[in-house]
Amino acid sequence: MSQTAPYVLVLYYSNHGTTKAIAHGIAKGVVSAGMQARVRTVPNVVIETAVRKSTCSEQDLPDVGDAYCTMDDLKDCSGLALGSPTHFGNMAAPLKHFLDNTVTLWLGGNLQNKPACVFTTSGSTHGGQETTLLTMMLPLMHHGMMMIGLPYSEPALKRTVRGGSPYGASHVSGVMHDQPIEEDELELAVAQGHRLAISAEALAQANWTR
Ligand SMILES: Cc1cc2nc3c(=O)[nH]c(=O)nc-3n(C[C@H](O)[C@H](O)[C@H](O)COP(=O)(O)O)c2cc1C
View (cartoon, rainbow, N blue to C red):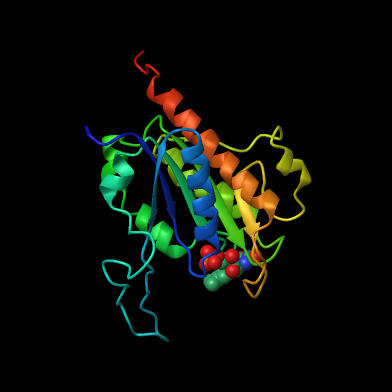
């Protein structure tokens, strides 16, 4: 058992920085609920193909920004916010690659009964945010995590004309990644982090024995 204070892990992949910005909004919401937030990322992966003969991945440590997530970061979290850019209507490969290496945690039931939420960003409004959010939930449910969405009692969910859905926070970044994060989008990210932290604290007290 870890001796560190309880924390919510905000784990994301981001190529152009927009998903990272939403991740930090969620972390702000976690902290506003009185819990620590640990923000982590994953390295890019380069796949060897007939057109690109290379197997190198990024260095072990990022030069700047959030540290790469370790298995212990994931194993010891009290709750998880998982974020990815929408890539062809699905989560990006580097994040899926990381998740596909969590079999040991799955076997150990380490994430069971912990709350989780998902968030994404996409270039276009109807470019697959909802399919990305919904499919990102699947591996987390295999891990026995409890999915937390965003209720319509959040005023920004009724107001937003761009990102944000009951399935999770989101942002529409534009095809040139030039759209700033809107107030409603950020408000929903913060609300999601807050809700996740409250859930993490409550679920940690629950007695799961039958
Ligand atoms: C390989 C790839 C696939 C993408 N697929 C989609 C897509 O299906 N729908 C969409 O709206 N945007 C798509 N995009 C755009 C990204 O989702 C968008 O730029 C996102 O905000 C980038 O997030 P980031 O700044 O965190 O990297 C794609 C981008 C890449 C590189």
